[in-house]
Image (tube, rainbow, N blue to C red; front, top):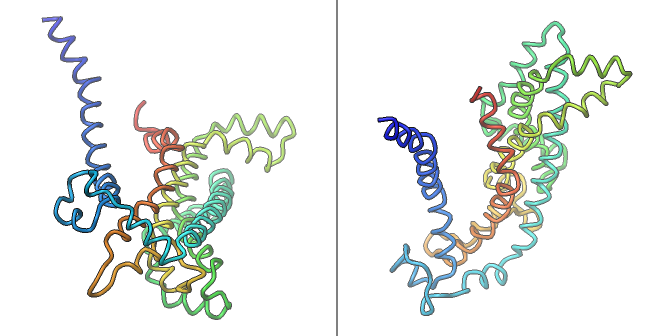
Length: 281
């Protein structure tokens, strides 16, 4: 009985979670693998056998050739990279400072201010598209990367402040008071706290990056020009009302997924720690 109980315990605690994780991984990666396989196939093979990997007779680089010959995809990629990187830096820097102030200093209206900043999580920024467009036009920023950076920064700040505030409030107050006694300034203390909430920062960076990189709405409205096109918007030119170049579409989508996958690989450990923090005691 003890041996059976021990085997059952090992199965439930170690083997079963890995089986479930493997199953979820297959489900999550299936669309990515499907797009990747079909991007290296001929158009006929895509529709005839979409679930089969490319073979010697169906392998083709036609889609990638079309992407680089018929569009400035390299430039689209650079635009998306600039917008995403600058936005993440601004969101993390400004959001971390606001979260530190709200978690560290208690003043009249502290709770109201936190709730006001958190409203951006519940109210989609797209509801204000017309007002944003008018504001961007009035500022002379239409068809510029700056307009997209400002909009995405405003979009990402509410979630960043909400998450980082919760993590920063869990940092022991004794640690901060000891630093103040030693003569450390508030900026120095802020710099000491940031490494302690690194999992939360990585989590926020991933959740901020994905909507920005995949967004089509604001690039289509605020920056539709050829010089300011993003990767997602650039991929839409291969989709027509009557005819679509599916080889080019799948190839462009494959290239667009590369930064997301690289970011996930680099920050996967911190991301999991940030998501599961406080779940297990």
